[in-house]
Length: 359
Image (cartoon, rainbow, N blue to C red; front, side, top):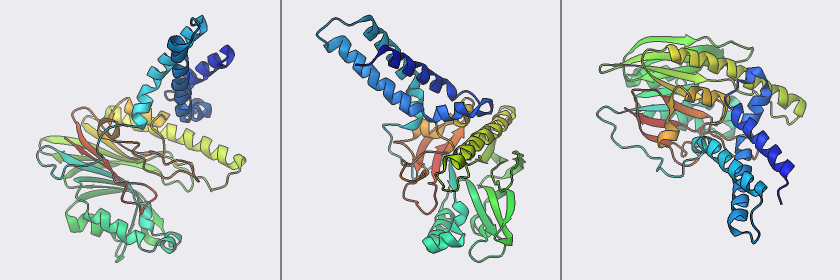
């Protein structure tokens, strides 16, 4: 039996969770933590709805006033949570791309390449992963490719990635937020590769923290008579050390939520000022019901929500926790999404590449 006090308390907490996705963590990290619990409240409210409806129609005794109120409130909660469910799981779709995207359509790839596994510890763990990943990206034919944690060493036979991915294939490119890594000529950051001419390029100056590589770069490309702005982002991560010490984990989570909020507010301001058709891709380090995701979604459409299938997970979370979707492709008015694919077979990075066909 569901007690009145328990149920009304649950509904209040559920409603706060629902509201939390629209409240910036800069006003308190409680809201960020609350937004991540939205699936819990959605499942509990759905269970309560089934329970109350069962009592309304199948109980031997006439339904009480509380049963009627509970069924109504839980039904309302389920309706409120429905968009979050849609953003998390799509029960249909085939997760495939057309073999030919000729005509007005073009393909956009987003992939966190994990420095192409160039770290010695990663090379020792899986010595062939780097070669396979570089070959996979090098053979990929997407018209626009947005890579995060991009690694490049000028003149290196293995890691001169500008030569391999751009120059040799005829892509125009913009590399930003480059910082020395491993060697004086080794660079780490973001890159946008484009088969279309790039006429403008720049970087959105996120506030920088020590040992922080998160950033945002953009280009304006010309395709036919259209100018399209492509934005590649890598939002703040939690920078967890792997320790389960609550005194270390909570501050790291709070900092990640707060910094991402600042970054996404700069991003949404920039999107609002953009005069062209807009594409935003990248590693958001945040879930579909988070403040960061919902803030961008209020301006743009999400390709997974339009044409994705299943859960579309892109990253293995900590320990034995389920995989999560933190990599996203958004597109604005004037564009439409024809297909979307999560490349599950490509497992050499800690992220899964995602791709959309837009027109």
